[in-house]
Length: 169
Image (cartoon, rainbow, N blue to C red):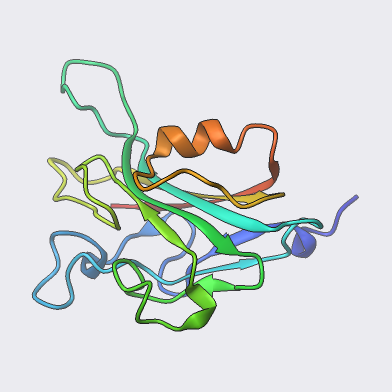
């Protein structure tokens, strides 16, 4: 039996698994402490991992309140080097500013049709935000406009492992 501490894991130093997403990470925050991306760390990448892709979505969203639940994409990040151990708080929108280790990382469009991290004000609280990190055997070549749909199509057959983290907002 595998040791749980050896599992591919995704965590955040500021959010416990299934814990509440602090306001500064949403549109409900104040001033400079508003809509900043949370810090993320990962452990025990599967052997052979060349890059990582991250998709964050509200899995309790309903575009039409009378219709079915349709996950709302909050953040898409691709070509995260396997040498990194995480993304710092406030990384979104500042890829060029955070240092050479982050060169090549690309943020895709969320469902608001803009690149980067975005958690809009919720009509009701209690939504689950799913952070899913994919360990991949290659980098992705998706062109200029990266979307969740393009990422999910491109990673088919290249996923070595997945790590999931849930926050409540």
